[in-house]
Image: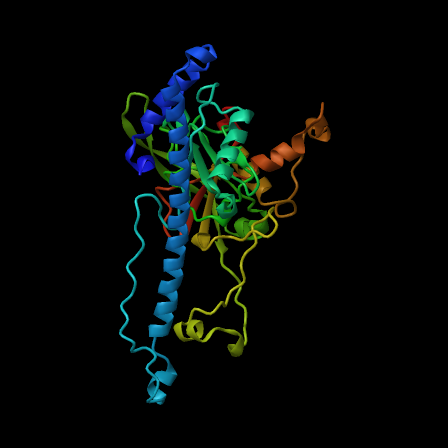
Length: 380
């Protein structure tokens, strides 16, 4: 399959040659080059179809493995009725799904080939053409929110050419807090596992901690009750490459993400699921600000939130907890005018209060660490 065997840098080389040829008169253009572009576009369509098929295969295999585990689990009826063989079928568990093109519980990295006349930056027309390529591949019905599409024609540096599907359209990454690009605010980060976009949306050289947007105000009271001012040791790197251990003050708190238990009648649960103890017993947690979207189980457990150990850091963390959780603070006269020349500063401030970094070096399953990102971290 050419989409797998061909080095990715060759796509960009062909696209650059094609863009240069487009500046020439039609009669002087290389017909072989045009045919090569069409061939690469077809190869990326096939690649995308294969990756999405692998995702479906992985999910079917995971479902079958769970059902097999359920039917092989011994139950009370296994020992009380001699005619029942449940739990002694002797069926071997299915091997875990493995593929270099797709990993379960990770975002798929799909491909299109759309030479961009603007270079690394995809203009609106190029993004629309990327969507058209996906329609030509016949995969739009298989797309899900959070799927990542890479236009391999623009290169493989950082997140160049990478777009994300929001359920309706392909979106650019957000470049507010890093030059390499982060998950945009329109994607509910809590609905995906913390590692879902790891190595799919790359992080920059100065920070390996990805940006996420989430509203923590529903847990504001719990955060307020656990808030502490602590000393923390951090390892920093100088411009010369030397590392130093420094002591800093941080405001730190935590809250629990735990679904509420629900009761269900025994007859309403599938027998295999009841036998394995996998019947649904918990309500899903809705993601704040998104209708019909729920928190992924990868976030379940303790969420540690920290901010700078300054008065400004404390005020920022208090604002993130929502109104009424902490006593109101006095504000300056500039706060009286929330809209100037069509810019709603209240909305911009509300969005800024949802920006965090996942601290990978401290996080582990069941305990995710978040650091509040302040306005001074903006680069745009």
